[in-house]
Image 1 (cartoon, rainbow, N blue to C red):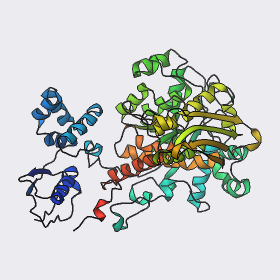
Image 2: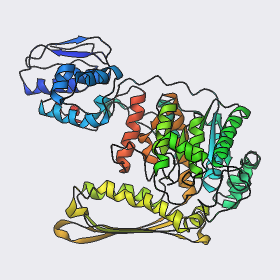
Image 3: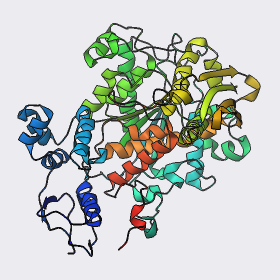
Image 4: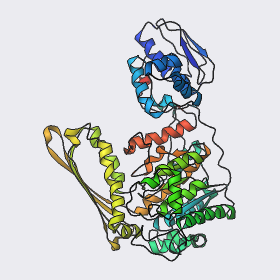
Length: 557
């Protein structure tokens, strides 16, 4: 019998069992995603009677009902019923119980997926009205290239190539529906004309002077035509300490204790917002890589962090001061460098408590971008890997900073973790259990911002026969990083207007070392990251997530 007018979030009661495999598959599909059935269901077999109950339930309540109710689920898990009641009341099943519940569901012949633990109807998204201020920590090659590119895009004299928010599309629904709008027309992003720029830097050069000195852009084609605009952007004094970045030293710096510096940054944020009549702000770290630091006792709680701040403790790096100031002012924060910054427990919790989204870390632009696209191919085809040798030459300020062993250690840790998480040697020891992975970065001033990355990859295939892949990527570091700054600023602003807070793992797509929940490993696979990002956008807008299963195209009517 046809089933009509299915309502999102409706409950389902099965009154009699289906009598065919076809009917069973239809029923399972519906039970897995009750809000996805918007068309009539037909079958030539005896079907199943289903009654829909229009009731508003949260994700946890829907899952609990599928196991027979609170008392039944408590008995199955060996938990107190009060625990299950708490899940139902808060609408959230704790992360550590989601995998056991999916396993239990499989044992009982039910389909329960990760997406079932998430509310299908998120909070309404506030409109992107008014001006969005983008505060950049660092006004060097990346920041000046980003600002220049946005201004050219606004004037129609350049295209924002590389920006997913400006040029990318997103598929909605089935392939047969042919719905693929531009992302900027699908989700309510801030308009480029509404962006305002501010920055901090230890050097006093304005954006025009910085762009000229960095020599990323052609001076006559892309700098001089917008010189007046770039000259209007002057950096605020930076909270800079040479202890954390050995190869740089500039005169445009703040003075004071760490607590005083944090309060000065907060004052800068408030003054910038007021002076520029901004409605919202976002902060992006575009500054240099700090020395390698490990998480310690001072980073575990907000209380211990603020005590260290007051004690002028050296475990509180300048990047942490910016992240702390941003969160205290309710400003989303993205970390474009591999520094230990907003990924410490104290600041992650502060972001949640303040309702502020954060993401990081280390922009994925050159060699790691290649690595996270090629390594998934090797794993997908079950090709073995003996070794991966990567070396770079780079001549800009970033290369100079990374010539210091302490700063390079921070970058090295960010780059080295990628292969292990993608290839999962613990699951495939014969293929990836003994990989030699080496990363080198060499400062070579004549190359400037035009980074060159060489990769030698020793692989093996059928019957163990060896093969090689060699890559020579001659890229422009800041040209690849600039669109990432734009996308992150716009997406973080969207996240905040949508009521999302804390770590935004869906933005892993942009980072070498993505922030993630403590209960899971980071996802480095570039294509999984892209799927995660686009499915999050679909979820925000109430569209069905796309799994690429595609069996529905081949099933009989």
